[in-house]
Image (cartoon, rainbow, N blue to C red):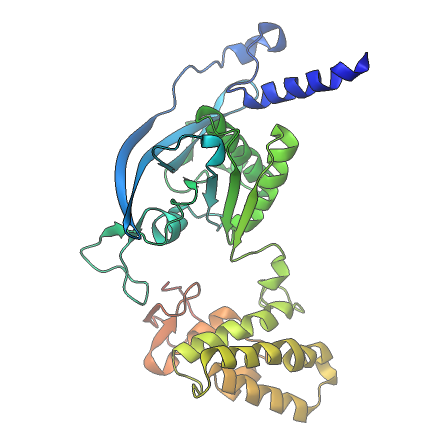
Length: 374
């Protein structure tokens, strides 16, 4: 007799998940909740385009709009902006993936993944990643649209997303709050665009990797929405891997993991010996960082003066920084010291996110970079 109950309960759960709005049964809502009923339709604009991709033409629809995030009483709290790209003439949407894309910060819009990486159009840049006037959008041969539909999402207080009038943006900040309302956004988009049966993927960059990890759990726990994949770009799940000793004394892990990136940048700037191939050079630095360098930092005051001198000499040969600078920083080079020192002789600072992008050193007397040209 009980065997039929479980399928019935599962069907009921799925009905709740697919619902566009929470229950409007007056008996389940207070009078104050009913007064908050908002019948406004979310705005969006659709346009159709064609993309020349690897010798073939891909037709797609671009959709820019907002979805309204509401509380349990249907009171509007925020408008979340998105740009979605869907491939045209797809016979079976259940076989067509949809990927939700988030940049990091956590104060960044999704413009970087959108117009700098995976959207069907990208900003035309030179080899150093700098757009030149007159600025242009060109077809992006690296777009993922041939493989998956794309939804680029701006979190509240970034891009065109904002709280409704009278609401404080701070209620959307923080790991859990951020994941909660973006979870609701994904539910709404999936429902309104009939994508529940499509394969679903989350993509995050930098802090976005933390964000999508939390979202993956929330979507499954709250809406029984099971993902088919999560893409992590510039992953930050263990924050000790990037927290520098300037803020967290005693955390040397970030210094160990940053050294190969500094060396790779110095190789690009020709501040180190480039007789070896880049791949061989980088393998050598990575091995040094994880063994000799890491062990030296772990020894602390037990490190002998001779060992210290040898480590500093090797670090200088791998980074192009002076032995004096490395010694002054106790062998622990953080990003804003490296970006200041590596091009100091040219009066330039290197970019934090992309060291190839450089800018004038606006404060030559400072011991670290005062801004990020990238």
